[in-house]
Image (cartoon, rainbow, N blue to C red; front, side, top):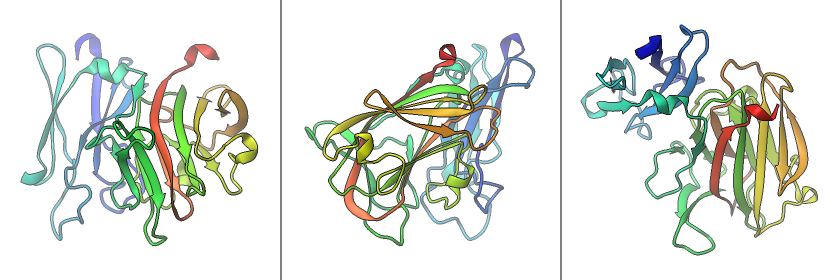
Length: 281
């Protein structure tokens, strides 16, 4: 691209038996120092059949991307293995440099990966029913329940989550990871950068101020360079300091909400925002 920048597309994915981590999602990153460091790691294409069983033969997913630079310095990406998976996207390099992101909770949003799970949906907001929120339960112990959301990779960043627990809500773990893995990944906790258990013996309990049927502001601020930790605040009060579990070159770029127990009572999330906090350290 202009000024010697390099745009890269590939699969920032792990722990799936097909294609060294899976081709459910195609990611893009950008470098302006000859590939020494990269920004972004954003989702640019999703296999439209990622929720279906794999075909009995042949490749599938968002593999073998082809990239072409346009006259106005954007990138056209074509990908998709098999005719019914073909996909073309236009990527603005400026978007890969962005550090702020907000989760889309509208019906039909493809930002949240939930395939291979049950009990998770974008449902009518519990307060007014006119807007929408992520609703997470786990009614069947045989099936996992999880939701996965991508945001710009940040070595130093902050995430704000507004959430509410129904009385007796299913216990949930929040994880921040530097890669994608399928929502039903049984080893995601082992490879996450930060893990925050919630409820029933977890780090975030009623003693910390977590009250049922009330909206709470949860804030996570991480530093993967200096402090190598993530501070957690609930309604403005510090409640935990999470250690960095693995070295990461780019920092977290995925939020994972995972039910760690079973139940029909829900955890609701109606807002997730991320942004850089590099200037705070």
